[in-house]
Length: 287
Image (cartoon, rainbow, N blue to C red; front, side):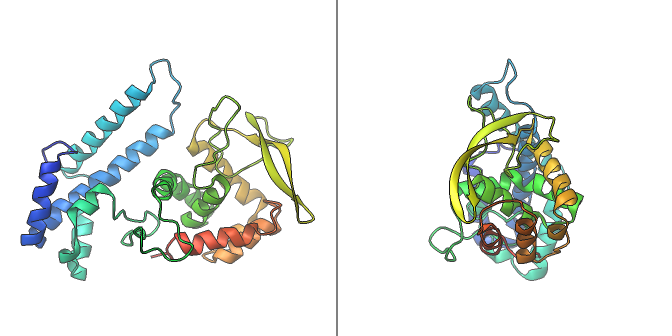
């Protein structure tokens, strides 16, 4: 599809046919399209970190910008890209995997690659491991937070998949993000409360707290940010300052989760078990 529209269905059909007749020849093109998809994800992440309430912002302009980014990513990948396609081709040829590539699945995202373990795909609907999430909203959430989780990982040393798993638990995979009464986003995916030392924006939210194992509904103040990038950075600083046991857990999911609970991150008595379960069932072990 190089040199054509990013959404050229006819080119995709032709690429699939070529993959069947000559898989090795089609491999480079498939890798290039995957690189374009990856670059589009990066562009989208950068767009999402910017304010979305400008005078000229609307659903129509956001749609147009999304289409523009898609085409820009395709154009850049056809002119050498960032080198990701070349690496993929080398790895696939070295592993003898050229005959297993379905270009339609690779480009459309139906066999999307796990950003926390490149080379291993998400479980497809109908073949799930019990307890493993595979719905579209889960894949969208992981794609959305991948860049920010990696940044927080670099800041703390905590594996990115641990960070994404906690954000998934706190926000119900992005479906229950903390918002103000008028619907304004807080960009707070970790349920970080606004204590006395917090001088930034806040949002009042009704939440469930546990006292001696008994749940009760209460209204609490939570921190609000201007972007996900800012929210994940604040989370990283919070981990380093208050939850050193979790940071020191290395690559052990259970110890990370226990470090959070023992440090008082949440009052839910099952908080650690829930995080560990999400890590173990929805994120692959480190490659």
